[in-house]
Length: 105
Image (tube, rainbow, N blue to C red; front, side, top):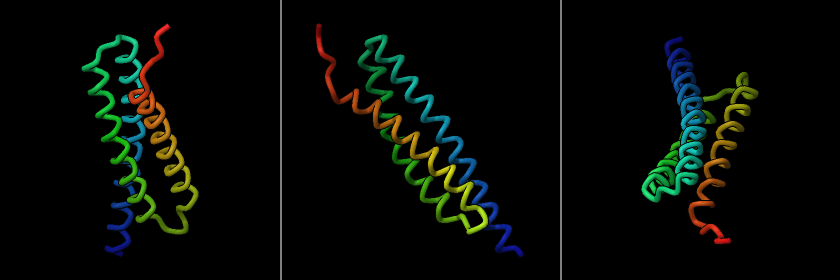
């Protein structure tokens, strides 16, 4: 029973962290968009660094959620992993913009 409770506790913690990372990813992409619009190179650099850090953190969290899940939680895990993957994709799209110079018209 104690082992089950510990497992549940780890799974809940992993899900809470996943939701936090998803929120942070949305915020980081918004920060990047704001920095890009204001054309502030320092803000752009900081936003890009945060997105890179978050991408790794999200990948780590995704593995934690998968590792702590069991068969009864497959659907929830798939949904959470999908949301984490979408967050990574949003970050990667924004990071692509940091590496590609804008065309001057």
